Image (cartoon, rainbow, N blue to C red; front, side):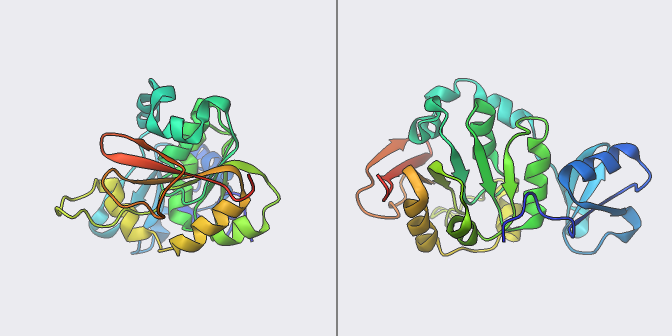
Length: 238
């Protein structure tokens, strides 16, 4: 079953007597447990009113809100906006949300967006960033196939950005993508694409590297950027 955010059985860690930490945990709909209880595995810590993802050897990671503001400058002319038809403010499902950067940018631009992410750690970090940027963005934490099979919501656009395969030249991805690759599960992308084509009312947009082969031959059209490409497939319901 899909649940908003990640559900009350998920915990973040921090000062259990700090009002700011208590308020943030409540807004996220998660438990707040004492910092002394943090596990050895990846976990989410509240520090000075923001979330930090903490991993092995005290590796720490935060999501940057200013990244969204930068992307909004001239966003209407971007490949993502053109591929999604964002100027018309369609209802969008960011079906493999991850850190939610693309979905949150679309939401901040004014599109009604639902972000779906199966991993609670990832969904919690992404949702916390959305609170101050696009608080009406809805987050669900579940398997996206289950969500698309059971939702009663309608979406003009389903946006799919799964993990890119390893770069053929061996270039290392950014730190955020390295951590995402370590935390994220795999999906049966063909099944996800099939389900997306069934529920979308207008189109499915698939993000790929610019020189990567399309997921399926002959997309309806594509929008090229400098490093990525957005393949657009008209949905089955059109």
